[in-house]
Image (cartoon, rainbow, N blue to C red; front, side, top):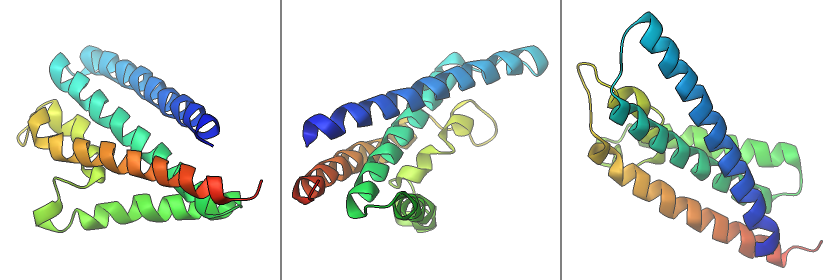
Length: 148
């Protein structure tokens, strides 16, 4: 089952990351023209955070697809999980650890009055990577048990 799931996960995660990078580069270019320069390091760090979150979302989608046989149910479960995560960020003690903290990272990393460094997002990056790997492994195990 791993041979079926891993290439699809890699393709969708890479496709999402490439699209995100292209969109970010286009937005960065337009920002340079219209408003002014942004720090390259902050933009690159923001792209990293966005790409990791997208890979996490693809892994959650694979897990949700392993729970049900219908597309609508898979979409509902995925949306439920991804929309519930920001609610966890309301708990101050774990707000830096929740994967949804990476959603606002690109804006936080390029400057402004409340600018952060990539170190601030390391807990969320780690949790996203580990939780994504666990979700992918769980999806493979669940799909192994399913009749095809």
